[in-house]
Length: 238
Ligand SMILES: [Zn+2]
Picture 1 (cartoon, rainbow, N blue to C red):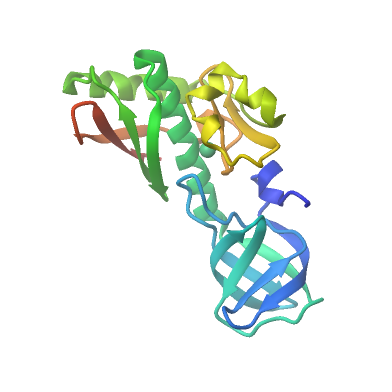
Picture 2: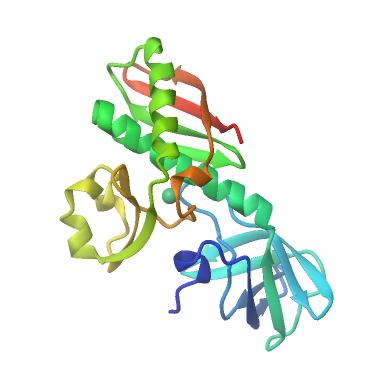
């Protein structure tokens, strides 16, 4: 199966494609290639439009079914074989890329200070939350952590995408903390996002190329959800 464009080029805003399948019950279409991210790993799915000539068909929802990316639409369904231009709502997607990259940077900062693995997370445009096992947390740590996070982001660290054979990923100590062992058994190749020098994760989402694109981040709240369970909430300031 061909990789979808977002997997290797997160900055592609649109792509010329052909409709290869139509589901007229659920009102959704499959394309031979797409820029639309179907959601996952805490990152929401994209929105945008499929252009047929000068007519835009709104894409409200995107889902993945065994690697097939379905575009859910409200208007008329195009027929199989129709050439379309698949175009993202780019402002929304780019904000999600910045938010997602901030989450990785936060994981790196928490790991360096506490060696605590991330246990969960979620985001929407411009804000996110991450859960950590952080037994040694004190509220006085919040401001220094925010300063360190912003210091790292301002360093303009490179963010790279690579694909590793499964057995290499399983043996990589820097990936163990992101629970690579929890990935589906049948997966033979693992996509790895590396904020060079700060954080490395197995991940399917979309990110910016350099950490300074994120801008400044505020840690808005650190909630205690249990003895060692801390939920860190943040917002993008720029
Ligand atoms: Zn990610």
